[in-house]
Image (cartoon, rainbow, N blue to C red):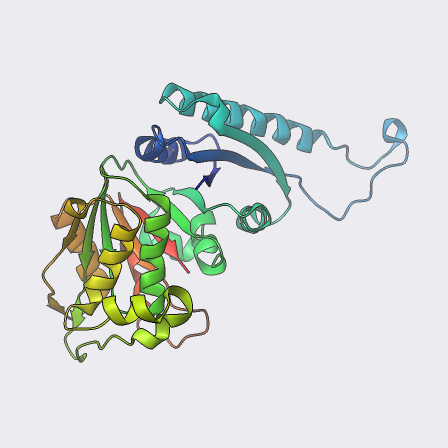
Length: 309
């Protein structure tokens, strides 16, 4: 099945690192195509268009023209980088979209309209405090983008080991389902499943009935029961997608005070470059410190994050 990734670029070193990341994973995968997108600032949206631009006192659209030209240069630079990394030109398309207020809203709207498989965006690595005070495109996308999986690339990521926290929830299994879709038939990517048990939490009981509508009663009753149900279902999803069983691993289950810190530290210990997180449904109650997914996103540096849901 063909997949399309939406690559947001701005001409920076950070977006170049995101291009390098996807190229390393998908250069030889002919079922994966890339759409490179630049959001062009159109300036103030409230001024009317002049009837006679040559004799008008209203500001001209010269600023937009300059920004649009810069956007086209960024697109060309990104396309050249992808082809230099071995991706054929016929698998790459590009365009610019205008924005007057929010780049994140423009990216989200384009992605939902064109039904891409994920949005790939670089993070500038400004740190937790800077992210909280200043905000960023990636932070706004994380808050608002739930229909389309979001891949946030923070720094230079070169390995193909994926760290996948699981907890028996629907959102957790949907994240694994996204992996199964993206990497179907692959035998060169490693997946490490992990569950961190909170110090005061009880052992999770899997509920197969919660998944009947998605995977059917027979599959769920077979693979989502038993003492290892947190892992057997996710493992089977990858195997059903044609992923080599030898590339799938489960890690010991630690007890921890804070799950997000445990996720990040164990991902680094096991040499993983990407953390994949299934996010709970919007509106679901969160703990005192916020959701595990939001804390993980805020604290992770020099890794890639895939957020689904």
